[in-house]
Length: 164
Image (cartoon, rainbow, N blue to C red; front, side, top):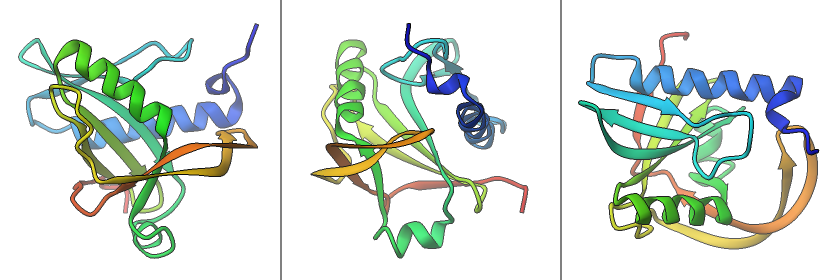
């Protein structure tokens, strides 16, 4: 039996960060709600965006322990997401005919960047480049070489929290 990273101390912090991101984006009076997929097993996506009892989108939620300035400077405005995750989002988007969104929570800035990753046909619409690189294997560390998507965040919608 495989132990999921979400069940580790660092995994629980990552899960709390994801909840914070969802709270920032969907906690207001914008008419949208977020329903998470189960966290007791690996899922292709993190959840669904719902408005008026209709699923209007799917979402992948990630958090990074960097501020907005570091993302734009050191990381050239690119969000690293495994390419396989982008393909998973694409597949679910194609099957359900709903767009897929990426939510990137920048912890020190208490802000969430929201990007459209796929349209309702499942076509990947975000500007990105693919590269085989060594990255952290999980939130608990380790290293792995895999195909990654470096997603341009310049067109992201920004939601700000109120912790700062």
